[in-house]
Image (cartoon, rainbow, N blue to C red; front, side, top):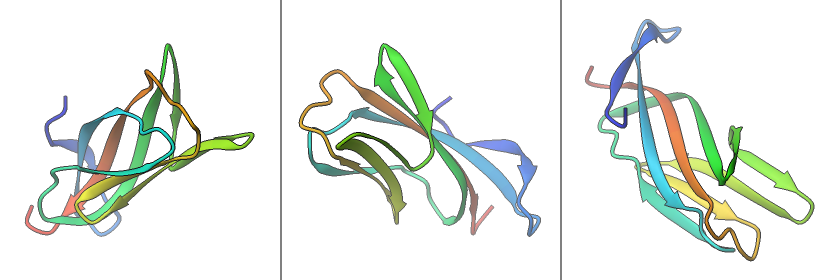
Length: 105
């Protein structure tokens, strides 16, 4: 589901951990983009994973590099930031699953 849900476990401080999957669309071509994740009252990122690819899916955290090409994902404030280091990622799309705690729930 792309909606926020309780992940079924708690963070070390006792806070409920929530999970949300965000569709990031087609990976940019040799550029940086910011995509809003839509999480309100974000307190702490516990973990995040990405699925990326066209045909063969690559699952990784944060970055993936091969040769002089690569892709890097970060979470900055209310955005998922993607930096692509290759001239063309035609047809490659990505989703991000974020595990996090909130300040109000």
